[in-house]
Length: 120
Image (cartoon, rainbow, N blue to C red):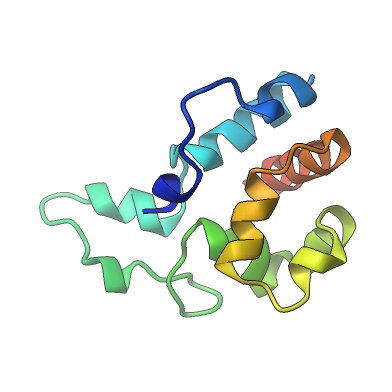
């Protein structure tokens, strides 16, 4: 669902901007949903996958997806203030989130990738 909003089959700026591989790898994992957030890991639960509506954050008791993880979850408020610009943190929305994830500014991409790496 998230990937549909950012899918673009060409070289993405974050691949060139993030020159430290561990940070680039973390951002790539978030972008392609190869992470351990509840939205994905509970999808593969055996023997029965957990229904989409029940994949909730243990802290906030709301759906734990990429948007929630990056801009909403109260567990990461301190580190979010350090790495995510105020524009995206103030009244977060899916449009702002997509804008943040598809950002082309090198500094913003580096900060986002560090945030994701540290919070993963």
